[in-house]
Length: 598
Image (cartoon, rainbow, N blue to C red):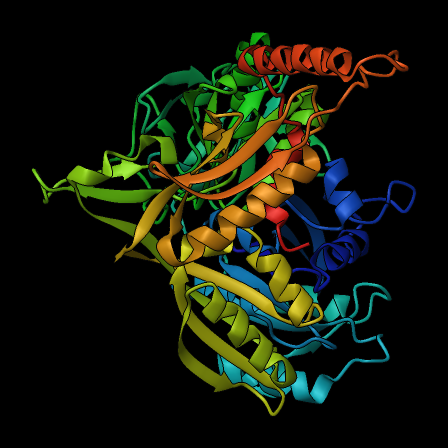
């Protein structure tokens, strides 16, 4: 066990984690030059197209250091704040972390938040200055930032480049010298923590785990601690570029298990695997359940596909355990699911994966967050409101609370003014402002979660020309003056577009949604009013004019009463049509509400 090292790679988005992981795989000979491709560990099309990592990927490398053979278990993690749950799981399975910082961009918000995650688990941090081959690299200044952040010696910062392969050898040597070997007792009862799972249509569910104590052997009877279910270990092994079957996986190592599990609910990430005949006393701690931040309804375009959508969501949940969903129904859209996501990018990726991997075209409703309502008759008990349509009658309500977050924005000093304006517009309060260097500022805000759901991140990137980095974590609920705004189309309420908004924003938002819908809904043979309402009070209205057929074209000459008679007849027909006509809302109208500022 003294020759095993478990480590992960953490960094901000686009600081070169996956490229550096590619070089490590090549240097250790884990992947041949013929099989090599960029982002070798990213196996989804979306990851390659967007150049982002969505899932953390584990792989084992063999490396000879000073004549001794070592086993290195590497986990490459995502950088985006929406996938920080993947990072927290990977960190729980490691003893060390490579902290990668871009030599041209310096330390950013996600770098700091991932570093704190790693320090909480007492991981050994190896700082690496990546992208040294760039002409804009600024090694001296960024090294000072790293030294100030983690208090290491400047000589410990390794200069590297994932593109040219500079410093890769030094990184491997540092991992072996600095990262502690895993501790554990091979003779103790089996104790292994599941940190990920994937679904294979032919083999069932494959669980990835890290063995803390004991040995797991092929054919053993094993038990999952939380669910209490027991299985036979049909196949176990280690993770190379493909799965490599082994007779046993010992303490300190990372491996996989196939035991013919078919149901998604039976494998919980963070669960402990133990032996059926000699179980460990308690489950492994240090793993928290995911808290969804953004809620949205996901509905099949055709109601008949409801069961198929449920099946697809269950399979997707295996691969992405931060997705939470429960059934719900809507008057406008039929049966569907209420889903909890970690953020807007997460929501977008899930929608895209449903289309690509399961051929499911879905409609997503306007995202919102969950609120707490307190009634006058029982002011102690909070009613959780996940959907504006669930809001109790306002007349019996004492108060309503909304979730708040603490947001960290790191930016260049020239953009501080615009970013402050944006955050104050989103009802944020500035709590702290720290100059990290002469031209880099860290701003801390406390603001409502509901305000960042819509377009905050996009607008932050726009006002800072892409230089600002953003990170947040929840800090609890606070009372707020919120009201329910409904959108009426032809007099019918569209529950998929109703939202809980702050009273001060309601008029402006209602007006903008009405104007946007007027652009997107096609004209009909009858006039369609679009209204935004708070209770019985209409706060905004736009009208889509009717398409008119020229019924008087055939009248040439004769008395005016003939024309009038035809027009009256048309008017009566339009009135009847308006009573029975239904208006179809195009899918882009639901998504356009999110991009009102474009």
